[in-house]
Length: 97
Image (cartoon, rainbow, N blue to C red; front, side, top):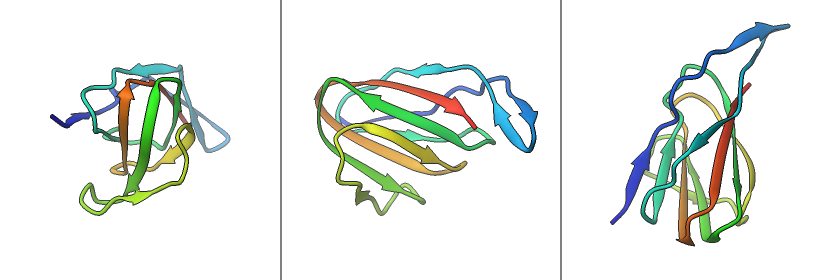
């Protein structure tokens, strides 16, 4: 069964127009796991490890496009989605930016 997770808000500081803050972990649920940036700041989401079969991106949570990678760093604006299909759950962390 598919799952949806949302990063919890993190405390940020704005320096030279950039929001910075601490690294936080996202617990990946059952496959496929949709991750929505529900924070009010842009975030970098890093996906690594596990056995990932597909990573897809969406602006609206409905129409997803494959990114062509099985891991890496992804930039999500507020409201953007990343869907990770996996056999073994990867490690997913995010940083506000």
